[in-house]
Image (cartoon, rainbow, N blue to C red; front, side, top):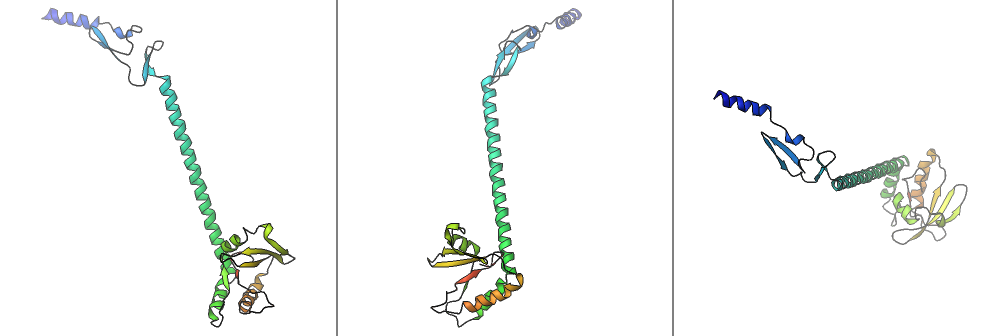
Length: 210
């Protein structure tokens, strides 16, 4: 019994790791007591004779690089679209708030009350939005200019109901004159005479009323 145990120890001590021998396997080498066995390289790897181990195939490396590149490209593209969308949305909100502030500063609520209070008027003046007048004049295209002077520029416009109108865009107006301007608009909107140009309305969503 003692002899058998001693021989077993001698065998363990003298066991040779065959896997240390170069290129003994064309895959993964597994050493066991007194012997060894080989297994194939994992998927997407191949045996490298120089490194004597399984390494990632060049094709797999190339494919991985392409996938990573595509993912990075799509990520940057998505980020760009998101940034553009957020910037446009922010600009839209800023413009909307700016138009609202101009409308209040130009006494839009006062004009609305003056127009609505005149029950005798059959064809009341309208308070146009800036978007309506931009559409009517192709965003105030220079080709639409029909007159200009020291006080402003007049554009030819076509409203959504196909009425052809003249839209005056003043250059400067004093803040103190805004109330007078509003009263004049309310009065002129009630006048209907063949020798006087009919006033359809105005726009108060700009720094200077149109």
